Length: 509
Image (cartoon, rainbow, N blue to C red):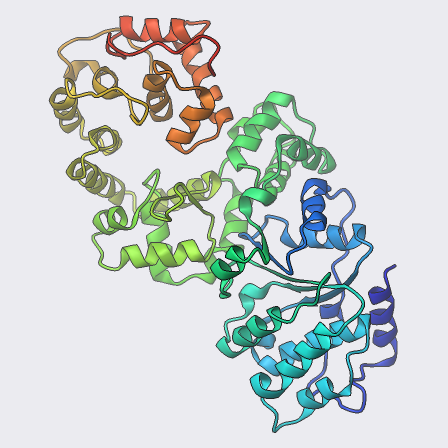
C-alpha cells in the first residue's frame, strides 16, 4: 500500500479535517482514492514506460470512453515509486472551490501544504483566482517530495473559472512532479503552447489502442479462446478499442463460443449498441444524434461534404464540435479536415439509420455522389451511385471517365477499367468475367501496379500497412494469383487495370 492510500484510509476512518478550517460541504473520501485494478487487466507496460521516461510537467490522457485511461493511470501509480495524489472529478466539482478543496486534500495527504490554502478555501470572502490558486500554486511549487497529481474524468468540468484556475495551477508544477489531466474531450488548455515548449506528454486513442498481442491477452483473460486468425480479425474490426474487444468477448461467450462468432461480431451487436448508447449517445443533443446517424452512410467526412449530404447549414460546425468531443471519430489527415467513424461505431449508427429512416439511405448516398462528382472525384461518385442503387448513373459515370485515368501514387481508386468492373455486366458494353471486389480492394488494386510498398500505399490511403496487406492477400485469392505481379497481370487480362500501369519493383510490400 502506498503512503497516500494509507493516509486516505486513516482519514476515512476518523473523519475529514482541513486543519483549523473545514469545507462548506461533505467530502467524499472515495474520490481521493485511486481505483483498484481488476484481476486479469492487460498490463500497458510500453505506455507506462513512456510515462516514466518523459519528464514533462503536464500529462494529457484524452480518448473516448472504453480506451482504458483510468486503468493506465492506476497501473502507472502501482508500478511507480513516486507518490500519487488522485482526484476523481464529478459534476459537483464545477463549483471551483469544491474542485480545489479536493485537490488541496489530495496534495496534503502526500505532504502538508499549510493552513493558508485551507483558510482561503474556507473563507466565503476569498476568490478562487485571487486567493485560492495563488496559495495552492505556491504550496504545490514548494513541495520537496515529487508527486503525480491525477485529475480523472475532467471532461465533466465545464466551468470556465475552474479551467482558468487549472491553467494557472499547471504553471506551478514543481520539477519532478506531474499534473495529469484525463478525460474524453479535448482539454481547454493552451495545448499548442505547451507542446511547443515541450511541457506536455499527450496520450490519445492511437496510443491506448491495444496491440494484437494485448487483444489476445484481453480475450484470454475474459475466458474466450480464439485462433490467431480470429484474434486478428477481431483486432481489425475493433481497431484495438479495449471496450470493443471486451464487448466482443461477452458476445462470443453469450453465444456459446460458436464457430464463426468472432467473424460475425460487429457494431450492430446488442452489447455494443447498449454500451455506445449509454456512454456516447446519451450525452449528445438530438441534432448531433441525427448528424451521426445520417452521416454514417459516408466512409469519410469533411465539413463541406456533410453540409451537402445533410442539406443543412451548420453541419461543418457540427462535425468540428463532435471531433473535439472525441466521439469515436478518427482523423484521416493532419489538418483536421477529414474524419471517419470507428468501424464499430459506424456499424451501430448505420443499423439505427436502416431501422429508423430506411428510405433516407439512397437519398443521402445520391447527395454524396453529387458532391464528389462536383468536386472532381468521379471514383467516389461512382461508389455512392452504386450504393444508392443508381445503376444507370453509375454506368454513365464509368463510361464518361473510363479514358480519363492518370495513373500515379496519389490515385485512390480503380480508375478507368476499375470503374467499369464495378458496374453490372448488363450496363457495360463488354462483359469480362471479373471477380466481385470490395470498394476497399478496388482502391488498393491500382496501387499494386505502382512502385509503392504496402507501407507507402497505406500512407496514401490513410490505412495501416497491415490493412493493405490483408486487402492485397484477398485480391490475390480472388484473382487466382500467388504474387503481386501475377495479380497485376491477371487484372490487366480482366480489364481491371490499364495496360500502361506500372509493375512494382521486386521485393516491395
